[in-house]
Amino acid sequence: MNIGHSTLPHMRVPALLKGNMIDLDLANLEGQWGILCCLPKLEFCDAVFLNQFRRTVKKQGALLLGMPHPAHSFQGSHLPTTNILSIPLLIDPTHRLDRALGLWSKPPFNQCQTFIFDPEGVIRDRRNHSFNWHGMTRLLGILKQCQDFSFPPAQERNHTPAITNFMFAKQDLNPTLC
Image (cartoon, rainbow, N blue to C red; front, side, top):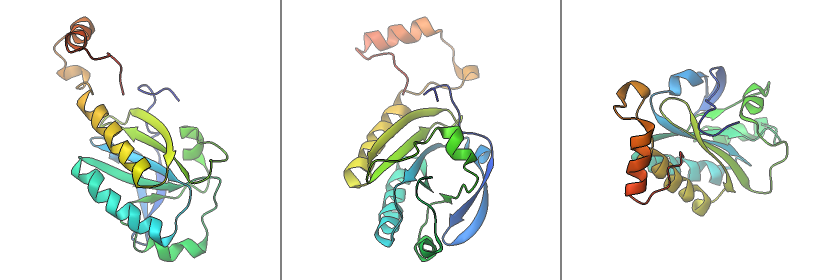
């Protein structure tokens, strides 16, 4: 998967939201920034943590989605936990989404694999991080950086890449995409 070139796959996936099964079309996520976290586990305290973090992400103008990591099977014992979860938890029993995103087969202990996508569905960052407040808050900084340095859609641009690179050089910034 190439960062800045690959997009979220356009497919429908089942998702749990507050204990209810919904059908989520990933194409409908376009038009807003988002963070998709492939979670190493989902226990009650993790659901409470994700609910709090969702509010923080929402203040930054993005959507938070979760997904159990494919290496960890989603069992019926997790259903009571999903009743309080206020983020969509994507369930991918056929592993189509896992393959499209290129998820690892075995995650390191307590590590999330996270994707940040822009309003056009382009994946701007892919990161492995700890599933704790410090690791998740670092994502907010990366999201902010991606939002600050994102380019408008092609039809809204009124300058050439050469002028853009000059603007970055003038501000002593590296002309890299998030």
